[in-house]
Length: 93
Image (cartoon, rainbow, N blue to C red):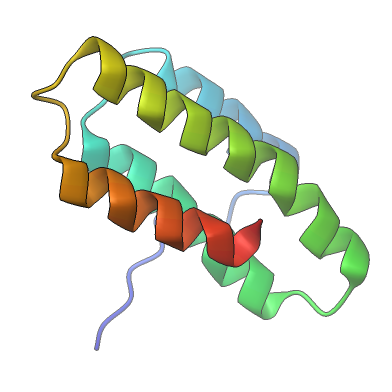
């Protein structure tokens, strides 16, 4: 399996800025999944409880934003994709 991490080299605050910038433009669902995957990879790489704790807030925001987009636009994502996104987010939360 090949894992491509677009945001690996970004520092934490640069990543948060990139998320705010990209999500402000109503991106496709794949962007939400990419950010969530980056959070999951950073969780795997982290060894401190502080790193784990700081991932929870942005993950919750990402989950709420995903659900809100789905509520406003039913063509944005299917119910299965919403459930999958929730399951992936709960790994962090």
